[in-house]
Image 1 (cartoon, one colour):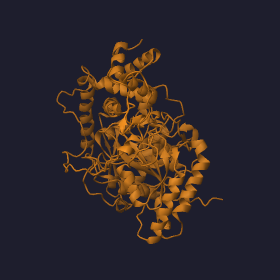
Image 2 (cartoon, rainbow over the protein chains, first blue to last red; image 1 turned 135 degrees about the horizontal axis):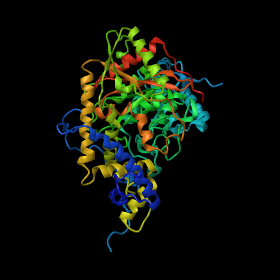
Image 3 (spheres, each protein chain N blue to C red; image 1 turned 90 degrees about the horizontal axis):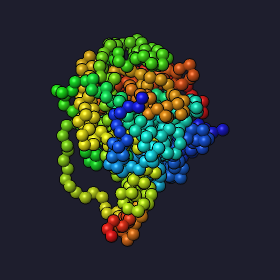
Length: 98
Length: 486
């Protein structure tokens, strides 16, 4: 029997948030895969974590400060060289205002 | 008959280069010849940089002739295709970056260039480092040099295979959940994931930023020590990078492990493990005892929760890191009528199945109403996993485990079962969650002649303990890696 950790409706909502397009056949397979993963991660609920602080990073404490100085030279051409579409020094995108 | 200088270790090649017995150009040519001969069967490289490598070799020879060249001057290396390399295509194993040529170098690339190292090519990898077999590469899988019907491991499978097959003398990988250690184990080479924050990630395509770490592959512990000395150290361009001084790692290789307390976690010797893997690691532990080290059983009680915690933390971070691939400023663009549709079709075409699956899971784990139940819960379990190690290191200086429950599996065997694939990282993943350094070192072969790897784990910034113990094991000569079939 198929799990019910996540519905097709929710998969479509998440796809929209993630800006990913899926075909209807892919959606069902994806739902099943996500369902399996979510059922698996459910095992974390075996652990009581009420008194546990979350770990957000494991590096050394604190954030080093430095002066805000420009260290690289402007290189607009080099940046635009990888652009899928550009014109007169700008990235070009489809029209967004009528 | 080729001179086969490509089979030298970095330490030996470096001394011959500086003694003017060989030239960087000869050494590089031997590697390139080997690449030309082996690549049709291995596919360890996405891009081979013959012209650039020979130019670098000429420059290295000039520097070697002048004297006082650094240890890596003239040494041919493979670079995982996740590192930004100025002027050399950097795909990250993805269609979405198929034509991307970075206008800058990653910090570690800059450091290797400054030392005169030579880049023979960009190595194959699972797309965006998401995978354990290199089968998720958009450019096709890498084959294991010991058996081309089997995977090289992943995600840094190309680097591991290239070093094992003598296509280069060392290589760079990255490790987010085992992506250096597991392929090192499958291919029979040394691979190190240093402490989180030991090495700069500037210019390394980000997968999961609280877990990602840079590290080397090599054919000996000494060679790996030589490479990480150049990689490690403070970088103003990566604010997470530690300012701690970098030790001379080679000096740690004393061969002496007398009095070293080795912890053996009972949770890592579980049912379902290939018996030969356990036998090899246990036999290596006996070698350590005969060298004067002691072994003590320890417990890491939350080990069984590491994969679940990892797949929430890593996918959540990935969903944010991969938002930048939208078809606007660089990479693939698939045109559509408006911008939103352009993002959606570009990402649908540009990303492979596993990357999309992880972005979806991570987006879900961070989405309104689910954040506390999934993402926050995983971060709390991460604390429990860290605490396990902290407690364990009160009783020991080093922890020894297998790297993976099995030797290299067959190509295609786990491709349709994401969860089964994830379980191949069960012994490596908790180190990333805890930020600890770990090394994979060859310690045996199974009955199919496939390499078995042993994992050495130390407290944060105790890379020297790992290197000393790994080198001491190599010196016993208890195990000699086999030359791969390819």
